[in-house]
Length: 255
Image (cartoon, rainbow, N blue to C red; front, side, top):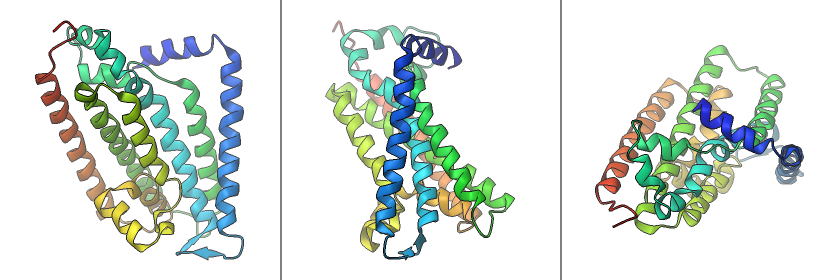
């Protein structure tokens, strides 16, 4: 993993202007999102139980989690069609290392870590200025739930990536992942009771950002953490089984 990241970083830093542009654009989109969120609170202090500062914490976690997705998951996912058409997947299958690991993390986008940095800085700002301040237990629960959020996002990304073995179109599948995670940009309760129910219990989008933010604010207990870990573990198992089934039916580029 470290070697993959080193190679990708070396290629990206060949053009320093890309790095500068990435920093500027990342900050621009973060500020733009903050302004957009502020519009909702122009005439109210609390919206569906969420203050502006609380919603800002969710936004910060969105930038961090989505930045990690763009850094680690998206680059290889977008190349899945190429892996199949050019026979790269056939080569991966001959390697003495997990094929799932190779197709998941072979390529990295180091510029996307900038989003994680800005998001993390904003999260610290929101928590430092919060009254009451989060306890140590709140921070631990929040970090654990963020970890499960990353795992769930990987399961979603890789599960759809696996479908490329049948559809051979990874671009459209990547757009689906981006659309799902974009819903988590704001607190899920802001979308209304019905939508909130769907994105919490049916499609657990709330666990990407809203639930970790609630934990950091002292509004979620250890039971939620246990449930999230269980769901994340089940997600890993399902994606592994799906990948195994897909490879079983894979004929290879020369077939």
